[in-house]
Image (tube, rainbow, N blue to C red):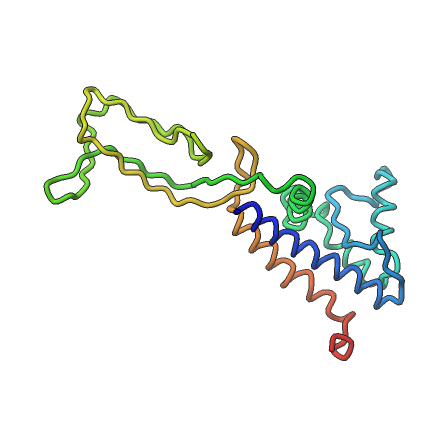
Length: 214
């Protein structure tokens, strides 16, 4: 269910931007159509050597919008960032496309902090770290996928009383097998939502007088 819930969040945010684009055409006295949309471009569509299809796509999406609104949209494009592939707006577009066409199954549980200790329990049930019988121990993986070996301990001699204390705060992360995107998914979704609410929407409020919104 986790991919379904994450996908729902992505689609709702992406759809909100599409609704905004539709309304911007209407306030510009244009006629929104099937090509109307909120443009999100990782590659600059305005350079002399840009792919003509990108330039046409941007123009089609914003056709009928007020010129000032188009200028704002141009300034929001991911290609203007230092690392376009990791700009929040591009990540929203990219992952919402994945979810829309393939189902969002790029989800891993992971951790950036791991503590593992072999030991035994005393008569009071308290866990006491004990490395005396440990030949070696090794962290095997910090990616929590089904069947993954997380930690390995080799004992000098078998000891049925030996236990392992393993502590690791988990988070859900977008990524591919063997790869972590670097930001927990929930944090990324919050970042996308804050970006829409605090950066994108305020710039367009001037086009929607309160009497129109009522």
